[in-house]
Amino acid sequence: MKILFSGDIAWASGREALAVALPLLRQDYGPFDFVVVNCENAAHGKGITEKIFNEFIALGVDAMTSGNHIWDKPGVSVLLDSDTRIFRPANYSRMCPGRGYGVIERKGKKLGILNIEGQVFLPPIDNPFECADVAIDEMKSEHGDDLPILVDFHAEATSEKQAMGYYLDGKVSAIVGTHTHVQTADAKILHHGTAYISDAGMTGGHYGVLGVSYESVMQRFLTGLPTKFEPSEEDIAFNGVLIEIDEITGLALSIQAIQLPINLET
Image (tube, rainbow, N blue to C red):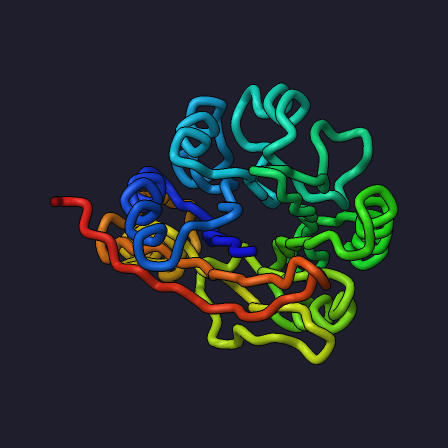
């Protein structure tokens, strides 16, 4: 099983980059059994709309994970409640709309998706380790112990992400970190067969600060005053990972970080 995962898709440039990148990646690495993207920054840097959700589905995206900004656009609660292909972090309150985990199917194949959010340097949220145990047990009890499971751990601290990697090693197929928008150089297979990377990076403009133009960010660092963030429109690139999974065991065979520069002018 081949899974392509895109790190946080940021702003319009990230959406355009995804549209250009997917055919190129399918040509070079595909076909993919599943394409999963993190969508929480897709709508002008914060959140997602139903229109953008449908655009991603039309591109061949099979599922979307998210994070702390998933709630930032009006109407998203209806989308989260009505479509099983988009996920919010599972360790938000059960009173929140949407779901944090589930199993998607395509061409007779199944993939478990678990979206969780970290506690370090982020707003208060339920324990992601305990939440992961509950979600994994539920999905495997229904679909079998060999069910491939992809975890998007949306977290700030690499220490928390690494701890989660070791905690879930052998229990899931892959743990992919998101949120920091900077791809890390630690893609590997852990000792018990789980693919891991601390952060898949960002799909969008990289000549800036986390997808934002460095000019607008610099004023906040220099003065401490609020500033309006503008998207970076230069050095556009797709960041993500390609994961191969043994469908018999549900464990990972390989993980490869991908950085694909995108020229939106052609």
